[in-house]
Image 1 (tube, one colour):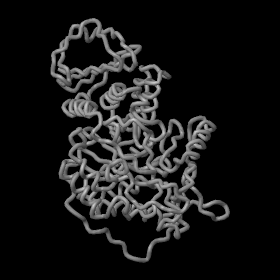
Image 2: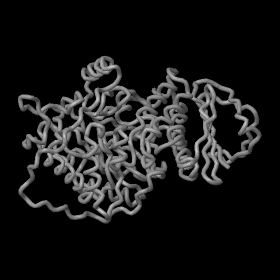
Image 3: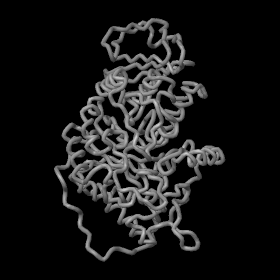
Image 4: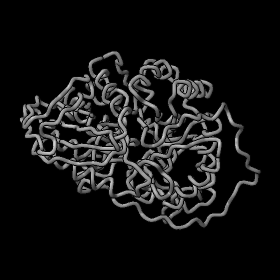
Length: 474
């Protein structure tokens, strides 16, 4: 599952003909995938005859993994770099760090299957292998080491719903979902024809999956996982997996679920997806929804998960950059995309940047081919991202403060307080100049502009240009 609000043309699917088919299927399905079927408890007790031993620890476990509230995540699609290799990514780490990033999420680095393949990186042939197109294990380790040395944790993308049809696991037939005739099938509840669905009723499959997850923590010294399609696996598997990984006491691990089930947070994930928030942002910027709907979605999303968890908020990611296009298209302009990011980064949750959004790449990005991005483009946007994230880092109020919304037809206005730290965020979510009537509680108050340091006194009205945002602090 690569989205819950509507069926995305996601990680297993994009070809030109596949895009048309997926749109048709999306409409036919009323904009939503079918609910994943429940998985029966494990019954397969088959185990390997060899004695398992954890791999030797490579490197020194990273001690700088940030607390969840402090995270700023950057998603890396290796195929947008020049060269499209681990070394190509390593060359950009200083620039990524300078944005204010402290967690890297690297899209799948594993060999891609060939049988029935459409070259999706989520069609994994060997979960303990390295995609030779990107480099060697040594190159991958060097990338992780370099990120750690610059103060960034690293999480890998992990695929649990299926493997390639020529996977190194495929001979273990009981590990896979099967039809009534005993034929291996695609993952239940999906239309991912390039992958074979895994069977979580198999104890042996669960064991192999968890061991493979442990493998990279030891072998490449990573700091956790973003788990793809997490809603489609049983909650008791996630509890089992995370409980097992947490026995590795030398590592502080990050768990991000591509899902929305509250059971995933209860199972140990710190973060899950803000699918609805993204959808509402798009609706507001297209004119299909009122800006005030962003508040409603913010509240309902945060209330949908246990207080121990947080939402990862984004204005695009690898799925949406492929299906919905550039942030310049979704939010109508550079200024529009920046104003949307201010809300995503400040309203509640943990911000994500998908590589290319900070330079305003103007075209859709397919994850099935190399799409070289000019990372020197639009330095004004890069400078704006740095300011937005620096303000977030400097203000506990933005990260954890008590939230107060101020209702307006066009301006998204809210205040957040934590102790003496007080911040006000005002965003014009319209592509036109708007006059904002200052709420009584904020009238005749004096603030500091969060980006320039200039003194700002709020009177009774404030005139905003299209997509302008104003961030203030005391």
